[in-house]
Length: 379
Image 1 (cartoon, rainbow, N blue to C red):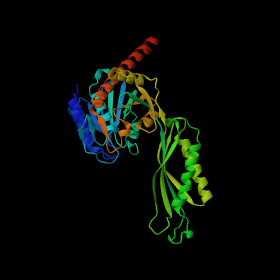
Image 2 (image 1 turned 60 degrees about the horizontal axis):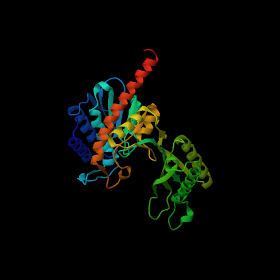
Image 3 (image 1 turned 30 degrees about the horizontal axis):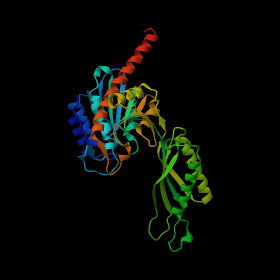
Image 4 (image 1 turned 135 degrees about the vertical axis):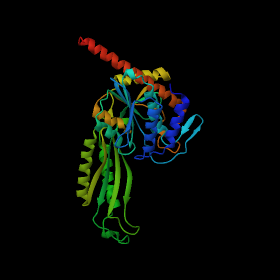
């Protein structure tokens, strides 16, 4: 049995490893060493994109516990204060990652197979989870570690369509004679307004999780303070509920860009930065039932099922594998990415027990269902 002191120390060490996207190697090596030397995993390796994969047990069910090792940029001094552990990644999502690792280490080998995956680049381009999908693991169930709060379960994430639009007016002029050339920064604003207008017209629900939203997140243009800009680039981030698809949004954006380009007589092109379909898990699955029972067991609360406005690794694996999946983890999501990112130590310790109990219930329900199916077929 992993002690609370060991759990806190391991999380503390992981927080001291600064791991912005695509710089997760130090934490991957730490997890690899711990999983073999101290936590009883039978096999651990780091794959060709930097994911650390640790396995133990044999047979069915095969349960994957998947968390991401990377964080957004920005260092936060690691410290314990008033029952909280502060540090970059404390909430999103190293507490979930380490809690899952420790829970997996305690799972009885005879109850099935555990695959622990610490993936890279979740905060970037999802390189890690895409590699897992390409690897075509045989998995019966998957749990993703993200901050939902100790008694909440995330069952849905929006999809995402992000693109980089470049407007090129063909020439520039001296700032003292702006009538001699179009201004790409001014022209690109019309593209943004048209995109906002059309997105706003889409039929969407009344709550934030069911609306299509768009955000202008980056803008760059111009070559000098006294020259009108020939080129301007903007990045647009569109989040898509399960009532729509990223493919349809791409088609809408393509038509808007073409229409405004013709109308304004300027050249505009766009490059897709991310295209992830929305996903909602089956909330009647044995996995959701197992996690719900575990939260009731440990927290003495009935869990709340959440549909979130963000996008996560669950989207990619869930859409590809079509198996029971769910996202769960300790922490306040509103603390994520902030200068005061933190995790309640008590909540973190409790989450290890929730994950542990979930593995037990998932295995139990799986074997129970298999037994019923075998009896039904006369085997």
